[in-house]
Length: 273
Image (tube, rainbow, N blue to C red):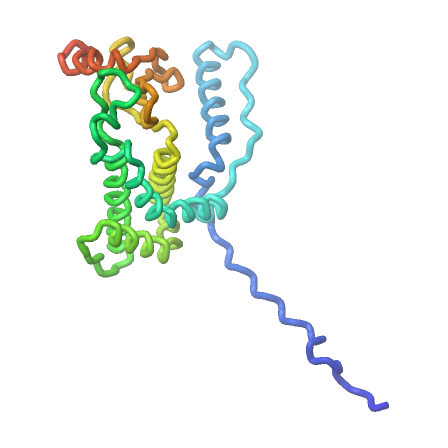
């Protein structure tokens, strides 16, 4: 039998070890949803410490939270970056789906808008308005990133759906460059997620909650939230107790009265929550 100096099968040779990925310097905790519990615990701890100091160190000293935040890579963690990227890719489909939701479009008839409601006039359509907001927000982020990277400005084809698809494709192609900008990556992620979440809620006929830029007539706080968007169901305005309001609910029968009260100059200056 001949003796082989090397291995008989070429496939038995060990493969070279893969090169390690370059270490990404974190800019701090991930600024997106994965650290919501950590932020709430940190805020509660800071408030408890402030109260403890105001009361002259009465009682035991508050203990810091035990929750550790997920670090960003550099601004968002990998999981949150993947979630936001998925929402970005689905925005053209969500934009097209909003046009099929009849009671949320400007072309819906008055009878369809009023179905199952009282004689109170319906509010402006949030569906068509949200389509406008999706296109405006995405093109603004595209223009900002093109300017940052020194790329040529995007061409306007005159077709809103095509322009939106092209803007999403550009942002998706240069997604890593966008997330490496600590000054705006968090705002970009939050806006993309909000646009996607609201669009899905509208398409699935879920209630849409939005903040109103008007003070509550009862407590003068800027904590009014309007909930609407379900055909055949009443909507209302709530003074959110979670935001520091008085928790009062204004039914749709009170809405005209509320508008007259706000526009008639009978409300005191607003107090920020």
